Length: 571
Picture 1 (cartoon, one colour):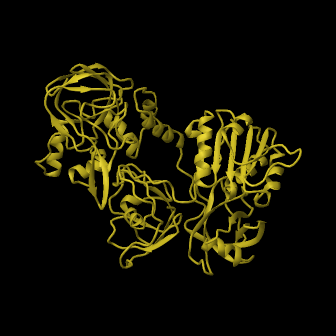
Picture 2 (tube, rainbow, N blue to C red):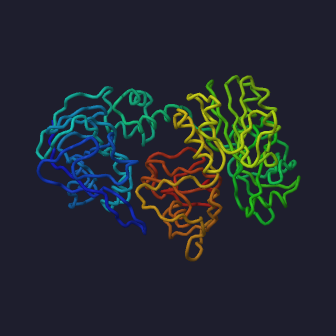
Picture 3 (spheres, one colour):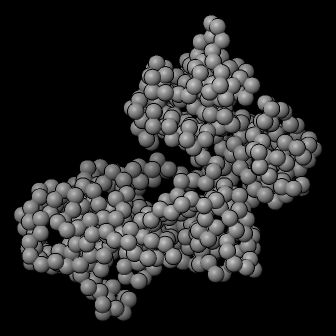
C-alpha cells in the first residue's frame, strides 16, 4: 500500500526567531539503518513543545512524497529535502484524503494507529522560511498526520507499509482537518468524528465544543461604546463602591448573562478615555440598571476617578455586556467561590439562582481579609436564604469565628476544610479573585475529583500567555512600544492598560501587543488555529492575510489583522 522512504529524527534545539529564542524539534534529518520506535518517539528524536507535539498520541509525524512534489510546484522550490516539514516518516502513498483516523498500519516490526492531523504551528513556517505555511497546509488539504505506536519495533527506510485495520467512520485526515479549521463544517461528519475512539483527546474536545456551540454566539447588545448615566453610587466598604448605570434616554438596557462584565471609559476627568473592565455584580432584568462594583486600587487611574471624581448624573462610555465566564444552565451541583472583589461576577450568578429559586445544591465560598472588608455579606446571605439547598462558608484571613458562629474559618481554603464541606465531584465550580487564589482553589477542586472543564475562572488581568516554544524571559509590565509614536489610529489593550498609536512597522496587532509586552496567545500566526482570537470592544480591523474562517462577530484574530480605525481590544 505504501513505502517508508525516509526516517527523520532530530533533538530539540534553540533557534533564533524575530529577536526571541524558540525551543523546537522541527529540524529533522534522514538517518540510515534501523531505528527503534517506542511509545513516545523514535530513537534519536525529540519534541521541543510537548503541549502541541509528541507524547503517546502524537509519537510519529507522517508526510507524503506526493505532497513534497505538490509544494515544489506551488512554492517553486527545489530544496525540499526529506524531514523539512518536521515529519519523522516520509512515505510514498498514504495521502491525507485517503488515510482515515483510526487506520492501523504495520511498518517493519512496529504497528501504528492514525490519531489526528498535524497541529497547525508556526514552526513549520520557520523551518521552510515560509511564514504562511501553517495556513497553506490546511487550505490545500495537505496537513500530514500523527501516529500512535501500538507495537514497538524497528523500522528502516524501504520498509513496506501495510494496512492492518480500517478506522471506524472512515473519516479521512483531510476531512478531519477541514472539520476543525475550515468553515462550512458538516454536522454529520462532526458526529462521526466524536464516535472515533482513536481520535486524540484534544481534537475530541474541540469537536465537542463545536457541537455544543450549535448556534452562533450571542451578538453584543450594541456595537462599540454608548453613553450611560450614573444613577447612583453606593459605598459597600471603605474601598469598594457600586455604580448603578442607566441609559441616557430612558430606553431599557439589554439583559446580561450572570458573570459578564462591562468595559467602561470615563468621558471626563483624569481617567478620560482610559478603558477598564468591571463585572456586573447583579443580574439585571431587561428594564433594570446595570450595577458594577469597583475596588479603589492604590494607583488605579480609573478606579481612583470612580471613587473620588464620579458623581450621580455623570455620563460614562460603556461597551455592551460581554464575556464567557457565565453561569451555565443545568441541574448539577454548583460551587461559587471568590476572594475579595472577585465576588462580583459570582454574586450576579447568585442573584440569578435566587430569582429562580434554583433547586441545585449550591456552595457559596468567599475569602476576605476581615468582616470590615467583606462586601455584600448581608446581600449574599439574603439571596442564599431563598435557595432550598444552599451552603455558605466564609474564610477571613485576619479574623475568626465569633462564639457560636458556624461556617466561618480563620485563614484560607485548604484541602481539609473543603473536604469537610462535602462538595461532590460532579459540581461545576466558578472561581473569581486574585490569580493565586484561583490557581490554588482550582488545584484543590481538581484534587476533590472535579474535571478541569468543570472549573471555570474569570481573570481581569491579562490572560496567561500562550507562546508555544518561546524560551521564557523575565516578566515585564506592559508599556509603550519603543521608538517614535506611529502615525496610525490608537489601539488600546484594555486588560493591560496600554494605549499606543498604530505603526506600520508592525505587521499585525499581535506584533504591536508583543512590542508593548502585552501577554499574548497564539500558535499558527497565520489565521488558522484561532488561538489568538480576542474580543474587539470597539473599532474596525482589516485582515492582511484573510483567515481561513472568520472569527465570531465581535472578535478578531490579532495575528493577521491591523486596525482600520481606533480600536479597543480585550487583551
